[in-house]
Amino acid sequence: MARTKVEKKPFAGDLNDPDGLGVWAKRFLEYERVRNYSAVTVRTTEQHLKLFVEWAFERGVYRPAEVTKPILEAHQKWLFYFRKKNGKPLGYSTQRHRLTLIKGFFRWLARSNVILSNPASELEMPRVERRLPKAILNEREMTKVLAQPDLTEPLGVRDRAMMEVLYSTGVRRAELSSLLLFDLDRERGTLTIRLGKNKTDRTVPIGQRAIDWVDRYLDEVRPKHVVPPDAGVIFLTEQGEKISLAHLTETMRQYIEAAEVGKHGAVHIFRHSMATALLEGGADIRAIQEMLGHRKLETTEIYTRVSIKHLKAVHDVCHPLGKIASEKRPEGAPSGAADAAGVDGSTSAAELLAALEAEAHEDEPRGGSVQSARARLEGR
Image (cartoon, rainbow, N blue to C red; front, side, top):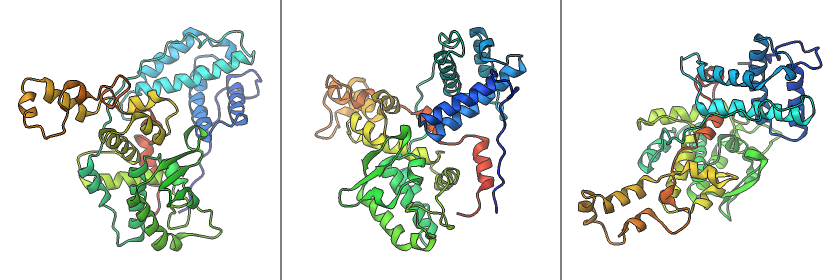
């Protein structure tokens, strides 16, 4: 089934006005492209700026010079009271993300001398909650999910190989779909992610089991799907095309639902589960940071704020009732609160485990977008 091309919605306002908000927004997008911002960043900026320009135009604000701090605060309040089609409000991370893009736009306008001062410079941003992951799969649950693909079918072997790579390496869905044949180094046991988030390359470890599944897929399945000229993408559709992000999300969502583990998610749940498994296995937080491709340690700390295993060890040692259980503690288990917490004078696993909800929000489509993506999928 041929895909229907979706026409882009133009910016609101008079695009013939050289000083109109919409015209300057388009110039800002060109500025981002020229400076090699990622296509995802430019596309997201365009979507949110279109919404802001339309909102401003409906209120009689047509040019950047007419935008004041009270107007931006009114827009912030509008975002707070906005309700989606399902009746739910925008999350605080979404509100903050939209306002951050608007602040970047007006900062550029002021720096380019389009406006005399930046009305967004003193805009107070909403506080974002640091929430625990909605779902993390433990080893038993992950085993159940991994067992879902039908290995008698070629696509089942492909999907199992993709799941093994996701769980072993914690790569993002866009990174998985873009993997090339020469990115896998079997001798070193590594996988190279090229131009990941923030256009940064990184090399991550990959387990032997994941390598074995990829090799099985490459031997048994990929040759049947590849269409010359071969671009070298590892995971292909039956038509020999690179797997779309929407299809990847929906495929993983269906397997997780089929496993009936009582948890819901898609590609990002493998990333959460991988990071949590490493942390609870004693991995250093900075090692996890490198593997996940986080530029700042703070991002990983949000992801991994409090390990429940370490908290349970502290509870067993310190709580009156917990001490009963601690008397039966096996040899080699933590013998004190400090040991149980992993306290060593530096950032430790005991202080860290929480969700990277903002990243999950950016990486996975939500709500109606999944349903619309499902409607666009044809075959696998």
